[in-house]
Image (cartoon, rainbow, N blue to C red):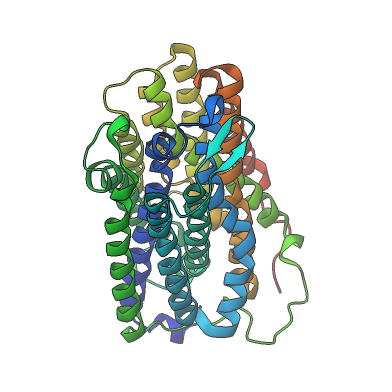
Length: 419
């Protein structure tokens, strides 16, 4: 960033990005928390495949990241940061509309059930999966803007990883309140066997109106572009972002990070139900609440390098998961959130370091790694069905922590700097 750009007051744009990060976190976690309730509503007739089908909700959401990340970076070059954000919010409104439509179709019995052998799935479930993908696409596009903007925008007395941690704090506020939004507001605190699909319509219509108002407000705000972080429209980059090894390995690291984060955040409630914990939603709230606390702490670490942060957090998280498996205790998994909290910011900062004009392009490609949030929880659901329970399925989380530790120590070292 030039000295002239450092004179621009980025506080307003910075706060805007932080707020949008809150929305992304809220909707991401709300989506995963529908797994348990919708398993009862939609999937009562799928036999022994309930866990596998339920995790398709999360799979659909995170599948959008590799599909739409490149679209987001292309839009930044064509429409700028602000134009891309507005288009992303329009897509979010459409996806929320599909959520509401899935409920309406099921209530009115407008679609034929799909039959797979002796397994029966209502058509409305597939509309919900489509909505999950579309809202996930919106979240992808928003993050393609948010992450590099927070990294590059100059705010006095902060470093890039610290600004990402502040954005992550807002993200965690959204993720922390989302489980109780689903269980307490959408489903009115009803027991699993009393949930009715009709309870979905009004909350999603209210969310659509809220996002529309946010979009209108955004059109009135000033959001200056940051030079040197994106290719101009029509400009051809002479290298592939994949030629930078610290970036390529960073994408793999984020694959495992998002995968293991969502494994715990999305599946811990089903593990708790299996263990007959009285309030399964409490475990998810404690996990995401731990991430909130960790990000608040991380936002004050202006002198601790991101590599050091990543080494310490991955080691402790791996130990906690191992102990949880040994004692078959889901409560220990909630503590992992505290250490998962600052991994995203640390990995992203390391991955895009010294990329210059390749930064926005790399941010879009970076989203490919987020598909880990689709694949690893789905694999875990398959393992849980195969193994007859969730206990040993958590080894998949340990694998992810170990790769991130490798990235922190070796893979993140810069071997090539952008021109």
